Amino acid sequence: MKFDIVTIFPGMLDAALREGVIGRAIERGVLDVRVYSLRDFTDDRHRTVDDVPYGGGPGMVLKPAPLFRAVETIVRERGAPSVVVLTSPQGERFSQAEAVRLSRLEHVVLLCGRYEGVDERVRECLATEELSIGDYVLTGGELPALVVVDAVARLVPGVVGDGESVRADSFTRGLLDFPQYTRPAEFRDQKVPAVLLSGHHGEIRRWRRREALRRTLERRPELLEAAELDAEERDIVRELVEERKKGAEDGRD
Ligand code: SAH
Image 1 (cartoon, rainbow, N blue to C red):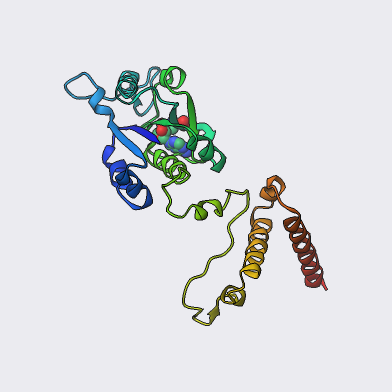
Image 2 (cartoon, rainbow, N blue to C red):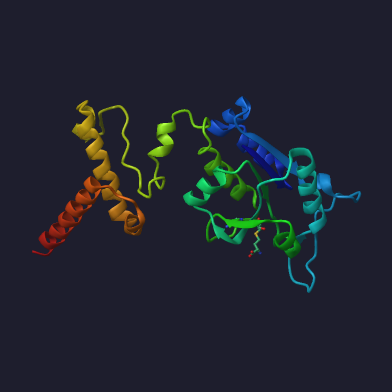
């Protein structure tokens, strides 16, 4: 899968993309990621990427021409992209479902805004979609671009070593993940649940299902409504709801 990222701070992306699972996948050629410096697409001596906003007001706005030229160069060098994503707090909210959608594409271009944002014509005529990583404002689109690349890339076959670990994650099935423990079996008087040490695979599986459902019910009940549960899981949810009701009643007594 190809990703091309356009930014005024390529060093920020290069550093992050060297590390970890994503870094290794790039090294092995499973992912093909290029970072383009927006300044390379300017045509003045000062390599100007921004200008003052029409109508006045504080701050600067990214000029349209360098962004258009960058994408035109990407099309020439790398082929026509599947999507051109503008990072923006005004965009569609990025989620696991969006990550799955993008992971099925061949070639994703990401544009990183800065300052007060980008000229509106980039949004209208260059980007094919806008994504926000959450309801807060960052100083630039570099971290959002990294968030998108990271979440999407780990769904690409061959990027995460053990395919199993991607499937069990929080949100992949619409449920939160079960609790994880590692050695030692007892740490500062806190014991690992005995079932996990039992070697009893059936019981371990049931315990994990139950705890994943418990977590989701306690923390994100709205996810349960949307999750596709099998008969066993629906039974467990009924039990957990009963348990909680009883717990609440006992608390009142
Ligand atoms: N004035 C703009 C925000 C500019 S923030 C507005 O209110 O819409 C500068 C740049 O950071 C944006 O162009 C965008 O690329 C990036 N950015 C900031 N917050 C973001 C978020 N939550 N999600 C995605 N990109 C974001």
